[in-house]
Image (cartoon, rainbow, N blue to C red):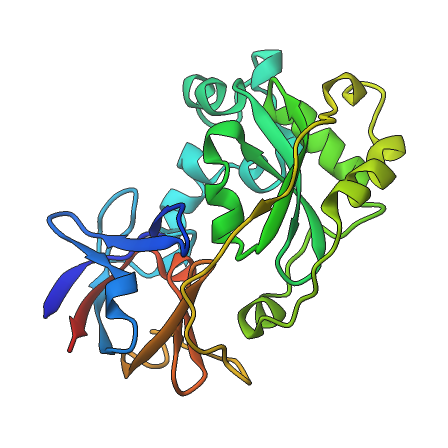
Length: 264
């Protein structure tokens, strides 16, 4: 069956396993139902997620102009410690930034390739963990705004990574760890400004991904270099599609690409 539309990160539903959906303007695909089927992906054109024009995607699904103008790509998104809405100070659009920054945020530990610290809006739990391919995660703090989450993350990065090795995550080259123990170990490194928000009673969340076969080696599909690709879908983890020939396709990093997808 043929589907066409602009790629955005896959929607997910918690379950055993997690359910994945590619959502287009007038249609959607439950990607779990495509497991063990042949999937062909054909690049058709660009479609910037902000202006909608057929211009090369620069970053995060946006053309170059929109990336440097839209509030959806402000520096505070990748670096929460740069948030300024709590000071009534705008980066690009104060109304939007207040809506996004001045809400409860979670500082968490996740294990996808190694233990890492991260930040997300409370409303994005457990979606953020799923998108990172974490098979276990735990909350450390719940703070009232993004800035406080950001300065906590910065303090903890001196003691634990804030990066994921996506290759190890996709090969499932990971080991179980005790995240409750890690949380307690990091408690003494939390800034005085946020220690009152420490969470004592949360347990680990375990996540199961729909993967039939993990790749032995990882070959990343780039639609700029390979505009047409066909393979048998063997798994979905994080925001990646995993195919039988060790090819992996990062849907999120391909946002803004208008594609045709044929499943047979």
